[in-house]
Amino acid sequence: MAEDYKKSDDHKPRRLGEYLTCSRGSIVMAMKKKLDALERGDNKKGLGKFLLELGIISQDELDNALRRQRADRIALCPVFNSLTNTELHAIGNHFVEVGISSGEQFITEGKNDPTLYILIEGRLEVFAKDKNGKNIHIAYVNPVETIGEMGYFQGGIRTASVKATKQSELLRAPYLNLTHYFEHVPRVANAFLEVIQRRQENTK
Image 1 (tube, rainbow, N blue to C red):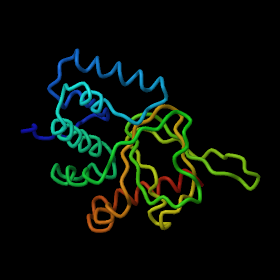
Image 2 (cartoon, helix red, strand yellow):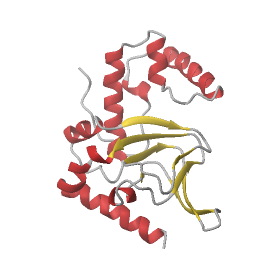
Image 3 (cartoon, rainbow, N blue to C red):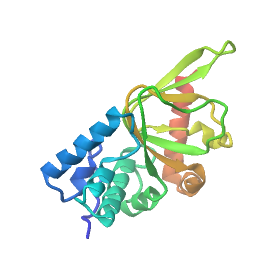
Image 4 (cartoon, rainbow, N blue to C red):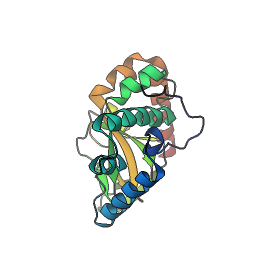
């Protein structure tokens, strides 16, 4: 049975290996394979997949570790950090991990993309285009901040573009799966609105 999840008091997400009973040597071996993949431009596979391919862990062990890590990561986000352990694990079922390469644009202004992201590691730049097609910097996004909250009230239409300025890890979930929390869980709804108000003030 996996150990009970405990909210972290700092803002440093724990590595997947901390949720697994693998030897340090096994983790190093999988990390080398991951680094090789990154050098080939493949950033879509996480460390867990390499541990699985090497036969070091089972699929069940990987799934349990990812669930616990996901809840831990979501708890660091100001929008969701008031949720209980049970609620964090429940909402975690709606999120998936995604890797974004440095320089990669993954949100495009004007496009329909009804998705909320949480930045776990890395850095992102929010920008828009002026009437001449020139990129205008709006803001940088740092770890544990959300991305895409403005689109929730715009029918999923993006109000700006976003790209990674360095290799980044994010969690992603459809708005549809988060509606209950944003509209029926007051402590989450209030935190969500505070983030939106702060973003609006910063872009005036």
